[in-house]
Structures are given as C-alpha cells and as structure tokens.
Image (cartoon, rainbow, N blue to C red; front, side, top):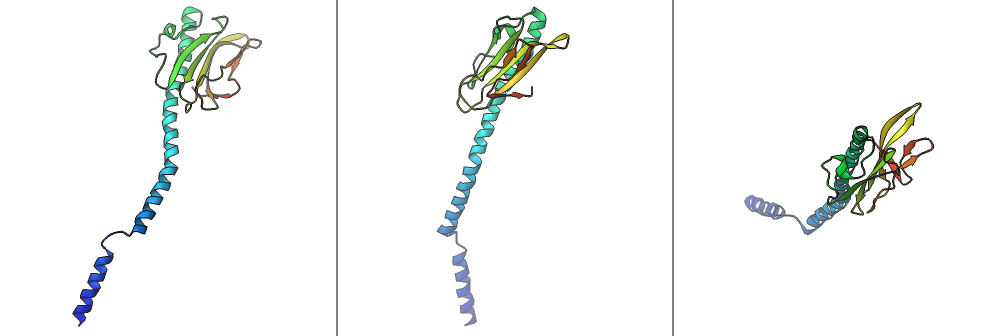
Length: 175
C-alpha cells in the first residue's frame, strides 16, 4: 500500500516538471519585450554618436589643415583639395566643404552637412584673431543643437574685435 502511494506521488511530481505553463512563457515574453523597448532607442543613439564622430573628426582635421595652409601660403584654402587632406567631399552620412570669408587671409569656415535627419551637422572656423597686440590663428568646432539634415549654423567672425564664436543654435565642442 505504501508503495502505491510513492508511485502516485512520483507520477504527480513528474507531470509538474515536464515544461512551462502558457502563463510563464507569456510573462517571460512580455518582460523581454519591455526590456528590448527600453534598450533599442539607446542602441540607436549610440550608433548615431559613432556616425557623428566621423564629422567631428573631419571638421577638426580641416581646421588644423587650414592653420597649416595659412602658415605656408599666407591665405586660407578655398576648397578641400587645396587642404591636402585625404577627405572625400561626401560620405554616406555627411557632405564636407570649406569656404573662405571675403578676404581669404582672415578666416575660413569648414562644414559637415548632415545627409540624415537623425544626425547633427557640424561646423568649424579657423581665423586670425587679435590677442592683445599679437595676432593668433585659432580654431573653433561647433555642433548643432538639433538633429537635422543640412548645414549647421556657420560660426561667427566679429571683424570689429577680430573674435570668433559659435552661432546661435550651435555649441562649442572640444577638439
């Protein structure tokens, strides 16, 4: 009689260990979906930051190349080809270029025009500015405040006090 109870108990235990219930599987899938929904936007933002690093690096390189070009040729370069950099004018994410001011011995503006509305555009300026009684060649890298396809607002050159600043709608970045 005791043996019959043990066998019945073992059969009952075996039936409970055969798998998951529908409720357990559903709860697991719901929790997994919630975690994925939380992580996915963060993952996309990291991918965009990596793409923006390309533009930040290229504009910084163009700024430094403009400094060297000014020292060698006494004027800023008016095109990417004149800078001597191995930077293509357009990649999958950005279009790059440079423009000089009315006098190509005073300042040049570099830009990374975003080709996607999910990326921020960048701009930079290299200029001869007054520092007391001395003149210095300085650079500035600016990031647009908003993600948008197109160019970032061009940095400002103040001819009165020969200073540079990021335009409204953009902020200064470390180079």
